[in-house]
Length: 213
Image 1 (cartoon, rainbow, N blue to C red):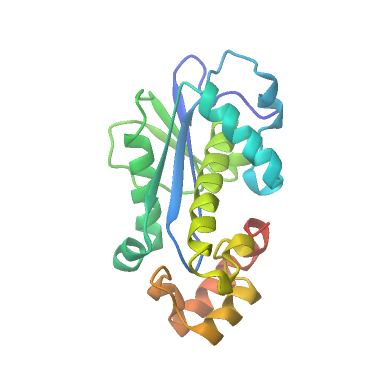
Image 2 (image 1 turned 90 degrees about the vertical axis):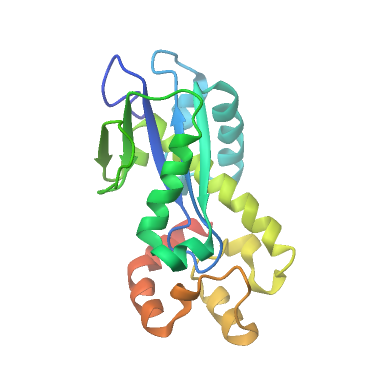
């Protein structure tokens, strides 16, 4: 089982994002405060959302939302991504998720190697934290399932892009659909510039494969 907390004896929120490398739709973040001293059976199933099946993620989403001390999801849409860039949009989504918590944590543990804080809450950045700490894993599951749910809704209006399968990641099917049908109003224009796209493909190719499952 993953670690129950980073700092013992204080209330901490795990924070993670989903959709950073997608060609369309928002980047989504979640913040979750779990009960560090309780031992729910489903804690043993928590892990990096990319390592879980769709069915297990759906099951865990229910448990997280029903049993956590607090949870919140935040979005930064494609227009905000184009305006302020994907890194700052990710920070924005994270801050929206943190601000949405009805209980303020004493510390934040953030998945990744950097975070631009605008709140007076101490934080720690943890590389691959979604595979180390329960609360970050829970945040990764909520971020992914809420974003996937939104992309399924958008898929109904734009079925030719396969968002029900690839969730707008830069898969070959999605790129080929863009070549054939052009861009939708939900595509990130900055991500579909040829020069920018080449850089993004190199950076996010592995993420596209892992997250489209």
